[in-house]
Length: 212
Length: 212
DNA sequence: CACTGTGAACCCGTTCACAGCA
DNA sequence: TGCTGTGAACGGGTTCACAGTG
Image (cartoon, rainbow over all chains, first blue to last red; front, side, top):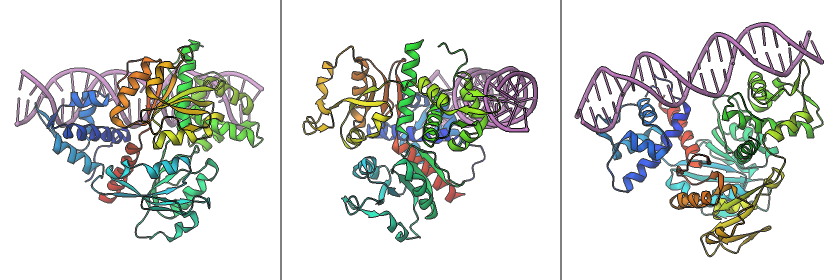
């Protein structure tokens, strides 16, 4: 599976959207979909839809659109959704515990396998099958069942330390809820879920509207 | 405040980062910062930093960098952070209640003023000063204290309904945690916080690494 | 005929490079 | 001299437009 063309990373995010909608359509009993319909559902142009698919191969039938089950399988394979990905969570405060309680993860192909915190009051709490452990115990994680995906939901001032620790234990992808830019060496992917940045976009927009 | 140049919307998100770092530096007692330092702190190039600022005016001193208090004030003004923005939240499940408990909002200039749910078990719960109300009561919101910023944290299948309702009550900016593309007329800004899209980016990356 | 797949054109954000200023 | 501010060059992602196919 060598990719010749360079694939815009934004295309990958869109594949997620397509998969979501295609799955929904499949549940509704539809079996064919065109790039125009899929564009409408995702708020994108039909050309964008076709171009995105073209990075990965040819899934469509000329004149007839895409076969939904086939397209769904293709997207699932591309996105690596044919396995259950284990996730390590660090920080079990507001956000962390909400994630632990979130039932949707599992049907999405992700599962929080381990949860850590530094706060003695939180350590030992049970969320489903997961018991919150002391952050120190992270060294006991089986090396062969490597971390790969980690979520950081600790306060800003300890996020970098946590990231360094996680990377030492082979984390390759980090979803970061802390409002800091994490410094990581390349080979590690960080994705920031930053509430205040999003809200500040809003206050900017609203302020500009008023001042114009 | 007419903007001649077109400002990339990504520049606004970066302004948030700059403000965050500049605020931090200010607290540390620093009073000057260069575009290079600010770039290091935010993971951006110095040219990017200067270009972003240039969209909004000239804040720097040639040869000496930027005056931190002055820059901070300028960024705060641009981002509209000199007032407390009221937010309406709909959906008080896992994510919604985590947001209600999150103390950081207020010092960031945002405050959840109203919270709604459809579930009788959740209605009436109190989080600080906020009591969860029945979604039906949304019509009682004072029209003059308009909604403007809203957060949707309801399940996917009711998110569009909620969005329509919020927009009817003058919401202009919607932060959407539900995994659906909301259809809104223009003039309304939607920003999606989509956990599964982020995680699927990760599973794509990890899968590609293994297959290469 | 309807719709896919894709090279080419276009557009827009980022980077470069340097003139200008303290 | 050191760093800002910015027009110009660059690059890459999106859109266009149409050839190709069932």
